[in-house]
Structure formats: structure tokens, C-alpha cells
Image 1 (cartoon, one colour):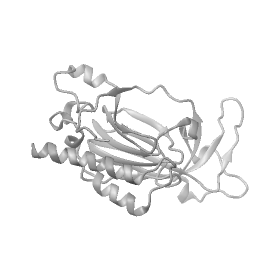
Image 2 (cartoon, one colour):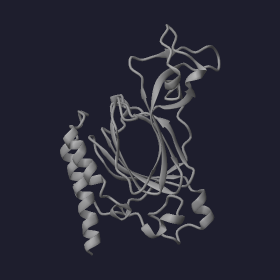
Image 3 (cartoon, one colour):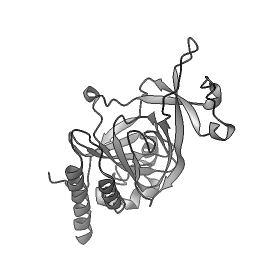
Image 4 (cartoon, rainbow, N blue to C red):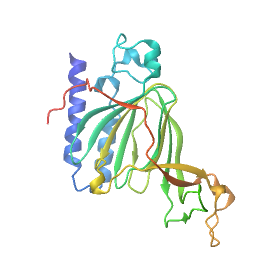
Length: 254
């Protein structure tokens, strides 16, 4: 009973802090507010949001499902599961549950701040930020996409328990790709949420080695910086194997 009460208070406290901090206008939160939210997120574990700890090692990313809901083979074949906790005009609280080796391809978060907390398992994160001022290369012809230069900011594996990661509109790895090293789950808070009519459309990209093109105009990168840069080309929205799951954690009182 005490554990459930603590879990409930954490989720409720998270909601209330987000409600107090984030506004529909999308004004970026202050550094103090970010630190406070990260400190709270750092304390959140799988059980606090309804994920079953006893199933983590063999659920292929579906910890919120009971062991008898799916056969072993069926669980392994399941897609990434998206669990919505709460959403409003100011922010979204959600969970992504990953089977081993599943991927969310490289994508952006226009004018958004995103908090990510790995709840269990290991997740490889590769992230870029655009190089400013912008550097573009026009298409060389049919089959050659136009590309823009980006700097690699994150390329590592996050293993729970670990601290909260934060990306910002122009820094912190605003364009990222997730690959599940093991079954894992990530709690995300996005502010403001994706909203196409407000200019916050999710765009996907493919990264090409820097050596495939060049900046030109005498602005070439030095050899030691080449590995930290890549050319990103916009691609069509991929067919993601993702399904919605039911949130079974403590109820958020709005």
C-alpha cells in the first residue's frame, strides 16, 4: 500500500510540476525549472508508471503486460508500444516500450524541449544538432537528396538506472534516433507537443558521412572534426511498427 501511494504521488507530482512549468505558448522552461523536473524524473522507476518489474528481463519491451497475455514468440515479434499518460496543449507525458533491436529512426523536435528517462533496459541514442550558420548541399541530380550539415552530439548507450536526458530546440541533440540494445522503456515528456498546424511536424532524416559531400567555399572541416559531423537528408515518414498500449499506472488527477 505504501509503495503504491509513493508511486501515485510521483506521477501526480510530475504532472503538477509540468502543469506549473509549461505553457501552450511554448516558451522554453528556465534552467531552474529544468533542474527541478530532472531531479523528480530521476526518482521515477518502472513500478511508478505501472510497468511490471518481474517481467523486464523477458518481455521484449512490454513490461506492462502480464506474463500470460502473450506467448514468448508473440512477445518477441511485437512492435514498439506507445503508452499515453497525459496530453494537453502544453505538454505530453508518455512511455515507449521497445523490444530488443527495435528502432525509432532519426527525427526532429521542432521548437520543442524533450525530457527522456530510461526506466529499464539499455537504449542506444544517436543525436545531432544543426550546424549554425546553416550549411546546405543541393541535390547532385536524380537520386541524390539535398542535405544539411549537422554535428553529432550524442552517441552512447543509456542503461537504467541513469539520469534524465534533455534536448532543446537548438541544442542537446534535437534530432535523435533510438535503438533498443535490450528490452527497454523510456518515459518522455515533450513540451510543447507535436502539432503540425503550429509548425511542429515530426520530420525524419537519413544521415550520411561527412565525406560524401563537402561544404565548399573554403570552409572545410579539419580531419579531427569530420567524424563528429554528418549530412542529413529529409526522408519520407517511415512505416513505424508501433501500437498503442493502455496506461496501467496511478491515475493522474487533473
